[in-house]
Image 1: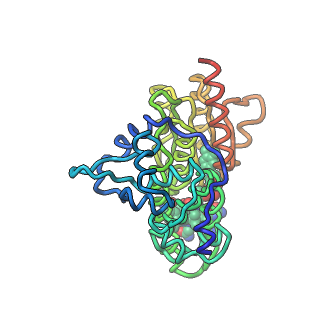
Image 2: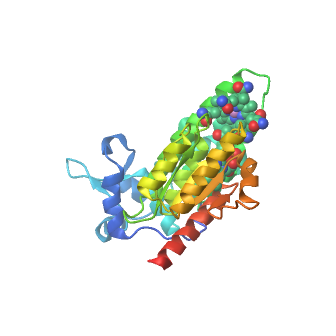
Image 3: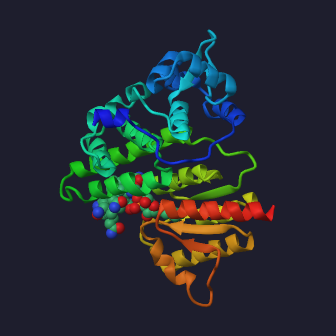
Length: 329
Ligand code: B12
């Protein structure tokens, strides 16, 4: 396993920020650098098997984001190192320097889902974060990571030990560990331009599940939207007002709990109407989103309301929306 990790090669090609953007984004996205795990020039060089002079050239050209300590030393946040590895298809010679040592100790199989189940059940925060970063650095998109290893592992955890009171402890802990790791991953995804299209979303009143809407926000960040996640338990009229006030290009709603009544459905329909009037693409997903299917059929068909069951689907809709907006400019 260890040698597989060491030979890690990035599989896919992705476009990333311009060089100058990287430097600007850095300081914007990391307000307190002392709280962020960083690498020295020599550690980064060792991690990627480069010479220190090559790394210094990357600083000079702006290909690698860096900041200086008060003492004038250059430091590279781990999130930036991961972004660089993913963007350039670089080999990771010493992944442990990027905090992936816990992953090497923890993972047992060649299946990301099995590995995710293992680290979540064990409850090791650094291993969960390390595994997600490793999969992301290997070329998996945030959407694929969410639909695949994370959602599948949580599904498995939810089905295990139905009559064991420890199951609730493990479920709560796994959810919190995923939240923490996804927020950590956010730093490697990067911040879209200020004039990027806007997306707003959340989950409606009564919803406890916070991961689905957090995932949606991260997927939209990856699709280069300026996203605002209002989280679970958001009244639908707050979302409607947000559509009117903020004029987002895309609105998302996650429905993980059964819709309790027809009035609940009617509220979503009202929101869909507000979205349509404001030319906002409205995308609804989640385990119980299909209960809205009747709204998208029949004479009241609202063409702006899309029901979709995956983060990969959300990503596709977001990219299509961005493309359409670009042609309208
Ligand atoms: C973690 C968890 C909890 C935690 C929640 C912590 C929190 N605050 O978030 C706690 C322990 C509190 C909890 C409580 C309960 N839970 Co629970 N829980 C889970 C678990 C294990 C994971 C949920 C999760 O976050 N999954 C990750 C998300 C991202 O996956 P997802 O919801 O499938 O979303 C995917 C798609 O739907 C889609 N998607 C989602 N949103 C959106 C939005 C858009 C726009 C798009 C495009 C796509 C999209 O993409 C996602 C990624 O692929 C699930 C198991 C499972 N199958 O998911 C059980 C599960 C949902 N829980 C269940 C149950 C029964 C309960 C309780 C009733 C238990 C009890 N007896 O008290 C309570 C009810 C709480 C409530 N008030 O509703 C059942 C539900 C069964 C059913 N018929 O619906 C499940 C399925 C477990 C099981 N197999 O029985 N739970």
